[in-house]
Image 1: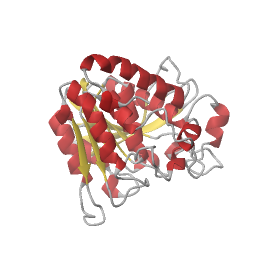
Image 2: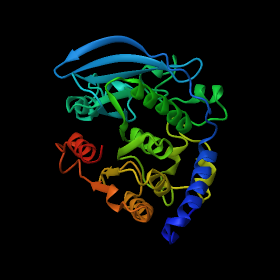
Image 3: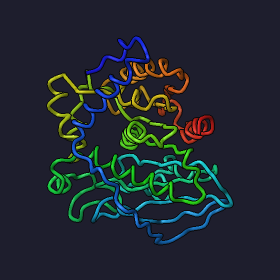
Image 4: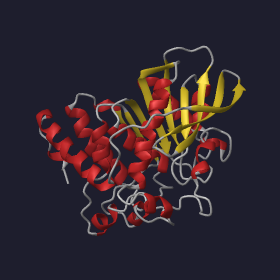
Length: 321
């Protein structure tokens, strides 16, 4: 595993980055090289003050159409656009869109109200992509159909297609694309920002704790039927992960990235490792001359249940996107 703290010069970073990317790609498994033709269809539209919300679908492979909410502001050209990745909730895209679930997590709706073009798609095993006869986030059928892939790699592949959809929207400035996500959505946001250069700004909320030293590391490869990445199992249990979250953050550099986490309400067993990952990744941002573009935001949802995460997200995008 690459030790980012030992990078002494900018000239060492390209080789280190290549090694990190190879390690991550080997872990997440096969990803198709070719992008599928989208063939976007609009199924219905709802009009709100300042924007329209469309229910659309599009192809992500030869057979699979993914459903998404697309928000388009009224009377805007060259607008910034954001892909909103949902957290691990059965209703998938409907929660960030404000159509179901907890309204405090309706980030896509809130960003649309601020004038952004926003897309919120379903990830595999959620929303309209739940396999009939199976519970949400049961990945058994997925792995039968895609034995060489991982759910993590598939979600990355699908979100790249969602970015393609955004780039086809007439009102979008394709040079101003961001991604945001909470929980599982935060994982997907970081992965997309790391592997797709079109992403210019990223916010990840409660996305991770480091693999190393995590007493609940099994959630990354076997969490109540949702196997995010099978190849993580052996390496994490052996205490030798091929990469950790500081490496994903470093791959995003120098694009602005905000990591928000709740130390007292963290899904992982070692929340103190989140600042460690950020500080290790900051070495790469420093070498690239943009240390201020990587930020850490700690919050306490128990002490401050009315904290408006949407405001934190919007402030970051307003600053950088």
